[in-house]
Picture 1 (spheres, rainbow, N blue to C red):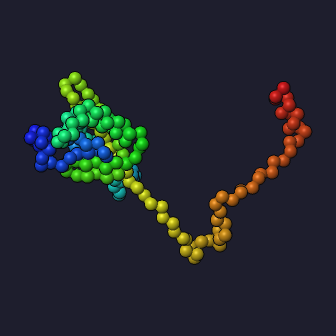
Picture 2: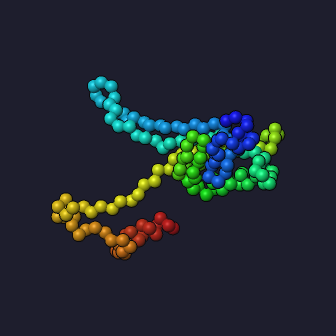
Length: 185
């Protein structure tokens, strides 16, 4: 990104973390990791027969400045304070956010790390965030075909929210009672 586009906001897509807009995106790293399964066999090298995909990871580094370059909209330090509060809110609420960069839009990302660093060099802070893609699953119900159910299992399915009953505990024998009395004495 050129300094002209940083100053005038022309010709580039805004990068954002949820509702927090980055004034400058300094770095973007996307990790697409997979693991190959490995099984040891008696003869020869281990056998690999499957690849397990890990969730996508994203690392961002950027700046948030106190300067607001919109016409008649100078906010100054309140912009820094509200941006830091918004990042804290994303962390506290633990909700998936959308992350937009100049190259891509990442939906359903969970913020795993967020480092906010400010020095005495000026009215800005550096943000380093780590995200992981949330993979959502849906519950599916299926009926077992009647011909696949064994005769012994038919009609034995439990019911929801029914009382399971009480267990009858036999009374202690005189011998058990006297042993217990000696122990507690």
